[in-house]
Image 1 (tube, one colour):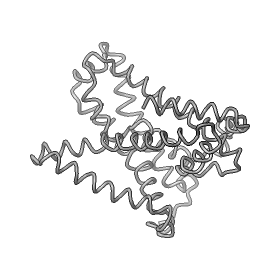
Image 2: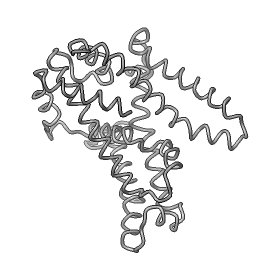
Image 3: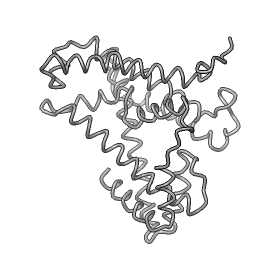
Image 4: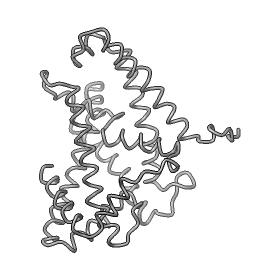
Length: 279
């Protein structure tokens, strides 16, 4: 991961000298309130849940290894800052190449496999950087997949006394086949749609990012606020006084779930705002 971050800084340096850095910065920083819709809020919420690993159980895997003397609020703040900072660096590294080569900035995940090869092709020692970059990205993806399957793996092993290696291989094969469908949706299955408009990749992306992650986050928030023993929460978060406790419980148990639910409903059913929904 440190080496991947170093390569990202190299790409950022190339982007700053490519001639499209100013346009990239304007593209990322320009804000037009009239373009913000309920769907925008839903996509932004889904992206924040995805990039911070909220609403999915992999944080339980990482949390199980956190030292007892670590500050959870401090760790959470560090994760949010680093995640946002790296996301901004990635944008400032990729979008200059997009504009210099006249590519479409709204390609989504395909940007990595379209623009970065172009960048490496024009950089000094680009072949070497490309040779290092994509295996490192693959390694990052694999380690993320391991953390995401660990909760299901641990549950099946402990609940049914199953053999860990067998369960791990089975889950890996299932995930691989599902992932294979998303890959093929960019080529041989590009004309195949799941719900008349979305390819396999688009459907899974929409289902997980805009529905499953927010619902998972909502349920986890309710569980932490109203089901976990108060002494456990106060001990882990370092809350000792009544005021901060009631503030935390109100935000996590009431404000956050209602906000997530409202954004989800209005994002999935924007017609509710203008009363144009039909039965």
